[in-house]
Length: 116
Image (cartoon, rainbow, N blue to C red; front, side, top):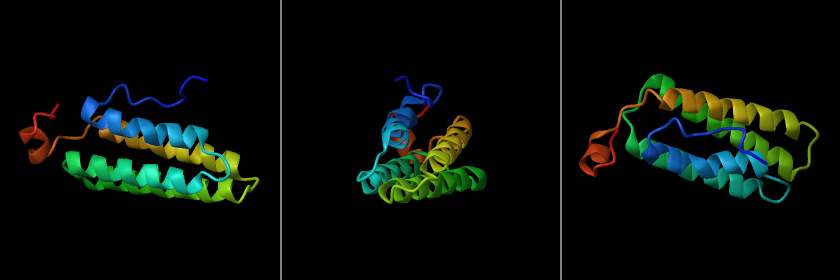
């Protein structure tokens, strides 16, 4: 199955870190909700370490995390709304990807030579 979301349009320093989050949302099943939440937390933290935060970008990160966590709980509880929540999480991550296209590398990222 081809990925429904793609981080290919992002700088590699962001896109590589986002790939596991995309995969977690697309494939999480019962019993793996905690793993999906952990993947989202790690990706979100990694992104925050690389960018200059803006209110809209921060909001998109928070919304994507919340949507992922809601999906994780739903699939572990085998709730019927898991399909809708997966779509919501994918939409929130798509919104985050859109905002990340405008993100600026922070000074630490630049010093490491990972800027874009």
